[in-house]
Image 1: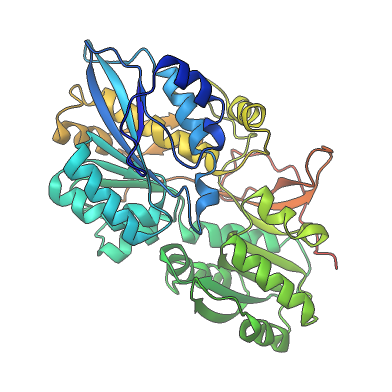
Image 2: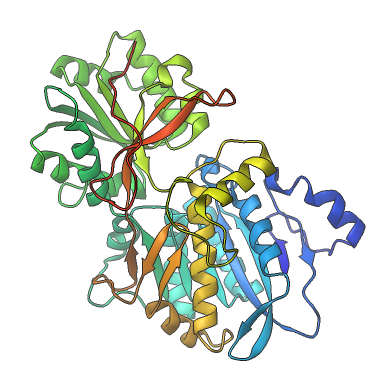
Length: 435
């Protein structure tokens, strides 16, 4: 198998000594070197992999190096497709968390690298290059962003879908329901203050028809919506004042780590002390919460994936727990949620290539994705049975960061509500924030 990174124009092959020397640091690398280990006699399947290794969403790409290494090792002997052996080459591109950069690297992939399949571990990046992939007839699968954010700003018709682009992830509507059901377990005044980052994910979650507002109101909550904020915002005093004056008990919305840390510090300075703070994206990661110190205890967020998920990898055969343990052993870091979806993206891609009978025929690959129902480490990814053409909806739960019993980590993410994903086991109870 071969892995390339063209994000820094690294084009030379590493010899065996260099490979061994560099491989130890691969899991922490921000860009990935070139591995040319596929047998020359094999035909090679080329997979483009676009991911935010830098920029505001770099945390979402933190497990990519580990997953690339894991998949590379599992597929080092190639894959059998319709009786023929193919080597696998993965071409990694850093989109720098930018739609503009996504468009650039997507063009580079399609025009220069000519992949048989593009995988995008970033919904906003997938949206940015989707029209090009459709126009050029290159199959593309994306993930890690509410499916509505990927679909509807592209004028999506669920009955028609798109020519060559596909997406799997949970929906903003389901997440809103999970949050509200979680809050129902605690006594509050049922007043929610919301704010959202102005990007694809934030716009999907703030949408009054299919986002958080509809789900919260349907559950009986009063919503004070302060709208979208720019990604470069570092002053949340307007939102905090509005929330404080309205007496809201709950804060919810979509923000990134830097936003949440700034917001929370300013909220404390203003004497604003809600009972619950539930933020999508910005509270996904152990570092997000650890950076808040003692104030991180009790923060709540969505649960995409944890080691307790009762599924295993179709590529390596490992359970979710085994993959998480391997990540911890390799990196020395606490597991993160994108670890599961990064891996599942490879699972879906490889499953489609195998099902196509001819991975060099892009129409055949496209048709194989559309007909795919795959069991992955995040659960079933079902394009075939989905009522939404080109979209496979996965499911989610609600969780809370609580003090860890493991001395190595300050907090553990507990599943406190599984109403939207009953296959998961609840292992915690929602607790109020402490100040």
